[in-house]
Image (tube, rainbow over all chains, first blue to last red; front, side, top):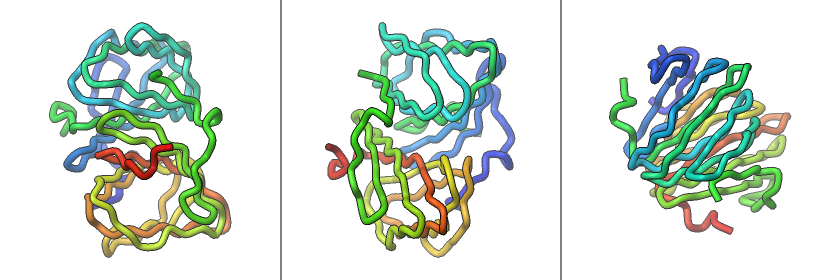
Amino acid sequence: MSFYNPENREVKDLLTGIHARTFWGEKLMLAVVELEAGSMLPTHNHPHEQGGIVLEGTLEFTIDEETRTLVPGEIYIIPGGVDHTVIVGDKSAKVLDVFSPVREEYKY
Amino acid sequence: MSFYNPENREVKDLLTGIHARTFWGEKLMLAVVELEAGSMLPTHNHPHEQGGIVLEGTLEFTIDEETRTLVPGEIYIIPGGVDHTVIVGDKSAKVLDVFSPVREEYKY
């Protein structure tokens, strides 16, 4: 199977108010992530390189020491091992995150 | 720099009517690709694994022997070395493509 409609896939809860639908190959994992209004992804890092694009809403995104408010269409790239934090405002948001290598703990 | 607004980046023409803005780290390349109405990406393959999501418009996407009409929000994953083709209808479309490893020929 090469094609996926996220609406047909159940969600995986990552944290309170943060839900993902993940899809993967051998080197890439794609995650459609919905973040409820007021949710937060505390500062963390992982060895996997991460990229992404904002699909809906706005997020306050901190990578290392740099903070930006991102809007739909904006892109981020986070090197492996670098701290990052996401704070969602008073409206929900949706992003596509991509990881390489695949995050095994996000498979389901 | 970890944050990018594709609107501030000049485009790279990939084929007639197909324009990309690419961003990369060490393992991942993200490409915001605009495909004009009536454009086509002929059957091809590359060793890089590819994933993506439709951002705007619809595309007729063939991976190996399977053809689907994809709408915004739908996801595709193409193993390295597998043939794929994209045909755009009478309205333009936009996708986010992701590659691993980075496609060196798409840097600029």
